[in-house]
Amino acid sequence: MKRKIYDRLLQWKRESQGDSALMIEGARRVGKSYIVEEFAKKEYDSYILIDFNNTTQQMRDLFVNYLNDLDTFFMYLSLYTGITLHQRQSLIIFDEVQKFPTARAAIKYLVKDHRYDYIETGSLVSIKKNVKGITIPSEEEPIELHPMDFEEFLWAMGEQSLMTLIRMQFEAGKPMGQDMHRKAMTWLRQYMIVGGMPQAVLKYAETKNFNQVD
Image (cartoon, rainbow, N blue to C red; front, top):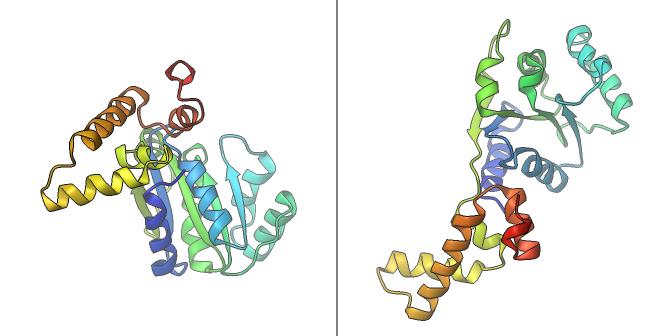
């Protein structure tokens, strides 16, 4: 599903050139992992996603034992994941990084090394609490991901043209006409029922059945 934050990710990639890591914060289930992985698939030659909510002790130990030897660090990272990393053409994702603050602290050294790009994701409340014993890296560039807004909801429903009309008429200060206004209000009521959580929106887009929306 199309999200507005995607353009912000592109801007970061273009402007940062590896000089900062992106930290995407947000509530649970707003689609942080989904949008970052979609971005990685489309914009990089390869990517590695490390989910610190469900990873091995071997993976965690890399951040403890090999940060002073990044050649070895990246060699083991590739071996453990089976993914080849390409200099300046690969993205490494630290998903749910609040579960392992040591990896978050390592961003300082990884960004300085400049071989690859890095995006972290973290739950909004936990990411601010789980910082004991670490220094928050200045190389970290935070942005917040919110639930889908009405415009993103209409995109997911295949109503791009309606959203374009709404925006055009609003900017011109002109009415939409009764039929289009009625249609827009019908979609707005549906959005208010479904909400903006991506999984719920996707399910509703597939079924058009409120009873199947979690």
